[in-house]
Amino acid sequence: MRRPTKESRAREWRRSQYVVKRHRKARRAVFSTRSREARQRPRRASRLTVVAPKEVRFHGGQGTRAVFLEFVNKVNTQLKLGGAVRLDLRAIEVLHPCGVLLLLSHVRNWATANPGCVTASYPSDEVVEQMLQSVGVLERLGLESRATVTREEVTRWFYFKGDSVDASPITPFMQAAKERLGVANQSALYDSVVEAITNVTQHAYEDDVLKRWWMFASMSPTHVLVSILDGGRSIPGTLLEKPGVKDQVRQWYWGKKKTDSRMLHAAMGGKSRTQLCYRGKGLPDMLESTKVTADSSLAIYSRRGVFFCDSTSKREEHAQMKDPIDGTLLLWSLKTAEDSQE
Image 1: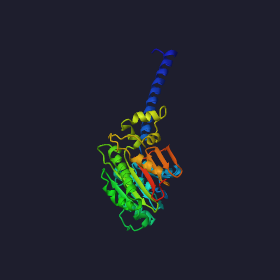
Image 2 (image 1 turned 30 degrees about the horizontal axis):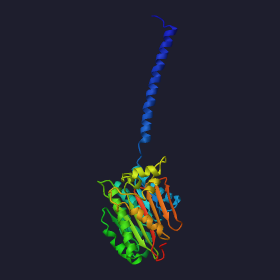
Image 3 (image 1 turned 180 degrees about the vertical axis):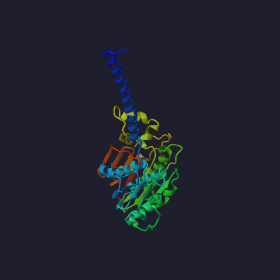
Image 4 (image 1 turned 135 degrees about the vertical axis):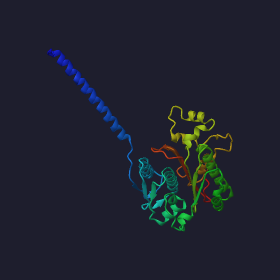
């Protein structure tokens, strides 16, 4: 038998090492793929208790919005992981119209997309329970109505909802506002609110979805308060569909990024998509009424954009939020005293 030479032994050793390296590389690829798939695969989470904020409010400073959005994001994250959520509502002490409308919208979305996965405890505060019961939040969360709505803090608010242009549900509020505002101012208020609702149903949603809107309204001794929310495509998302708006926006913000705040600022004027001179005037009319009426304000949140006008400080500004909201939230406070006109 021929004895292997030094060169042949070296060649066999290199061949064996090549085979070993290929085998190790293949094993690493298999384990790497498995670990990557395991990392990407969402784990099914158990039930998580999320404590609601002490003050349910969105309109205000950045810190106020951050508290509310942190609460919402915790619920959204848990539901995306496939887990269940229990909302602890016992900590709520103060409700604001903006917070109630947004909470109602989120609860509706959670209950629709994840049936049976979101439950809640009854609020500890009597007024909070009556308010959440009257607007249907507790029912959406599977809680029975056990309170009798008698508190003045709740009954003085008018709550409306709809999915069409029909504005007849707001008639009771407008009848009550006529005594406080007078016929002329009440007519202007009615026209602006109806125009805002019409814009929601005609522009905010796609044609094949339910065009839902919610509204809170109330009267104090000196002010009329109106809050409207929709869950549509937002004002920045639909603004460029208006005829001639693209050229106008390009002229105003030439060389600048078209942020939601700038688009929202541009939406305070212009003609509507329907080409009618009396259409698309809801927001501009509200803004004009706010400017000429003392101690009045108008705030609009849409996607990441914020627009705010205050007649007392004569301040009108727009800003960009870090986190977006679904749809558009409008908050209007209009003074009704006889000496309010400047």
